[in-house]
Length: 368
Ligand code: DHB
Image 1 (cartoon, rainbow, N blue to C red):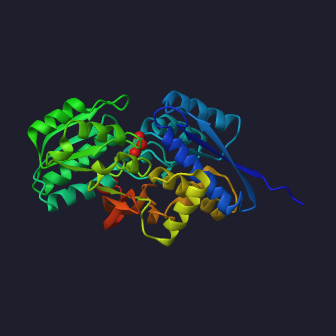
Image 2 (cartoon, rainbow, N blue to C red; image 1 turned 180 degrees about the vertical axis):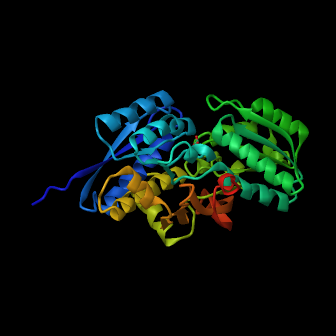
Image 3 (cartoon, helix red, strand yellow; image 1 turned 180 degrees about the horizontal axis):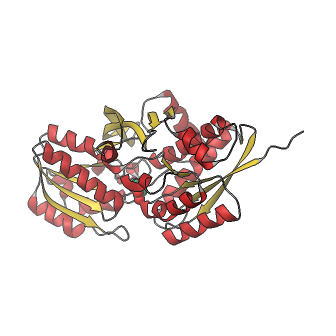
């Protein structure tokens, strides 16, 4: 009997350090996907190799190099932060290896290599919805607070352009360092200025500290409306924020409360496997594995990188987050974006979806 050959996937994630929750979520989702679908696809045995890059670009690049040269992986996947994806994109091009971005969300990442395919999201994609919501709900003057790197700058720009186009105004903006952020000085300015709303982007995991300082400055009682991308009210941490988070309006592509049969099954299985609520990072990992499995089916198990990326272009399926597809031209994800409000469901805080922007592409690339 012929021995099935092995196809290796190098999954590089921050498993330690300040962004470890991203790594834990994606690893759990990838393993759950394999446990449910089996480790054999198109006659090949799939082997997942998980490596910790600690969230440091130099480490990500070194690990990717080792995975390519020593392990001969057919896929590089993961990428918990934008700089980590940027660090590896040239290696994907040189080695013609599909690079599946499951987390990082700066618009331009897919333009760094023709081998990048993304199953997470882009910040402009999820930000224009909250700007539209704000404009329609009486927000004339807003201030913005974002983490000072790719996704934050994307969010700041998308929010300002969209609110301004709708007749609103951004009256103050600040970029806060990604590492060891201190939001207090700017929050004092917000308290003094009293805009109609404060728009915030911080990456997965950082929302708790933001919310703590928001409350410490008394902003929860100031009448300044808190609006954000769903990164801030991440499913991972929203319940632990407590009732101050209630009523926060965000837009994002995934909520653990998304009311579909696929999502109910996903959340239940994830809880059983990982003993926690899946967040948007988990769903990026889950769909990244689906993309890899389906591409291998299409190539009948062939691992030529160019053929695999071609197989991924235009692929469409139903994710726990709703219907999604890979834009054949940009290799970026097209997906529903939902407006949500933090509410209590069975005693726990969730992002409860109340309206849908359907099949949203990355607006930056759609405009090119
Ligand atoms: C990125 C990281 C995050 O944790 C997030 O929520 C959004 C974007 C990034 O680095 O691209």
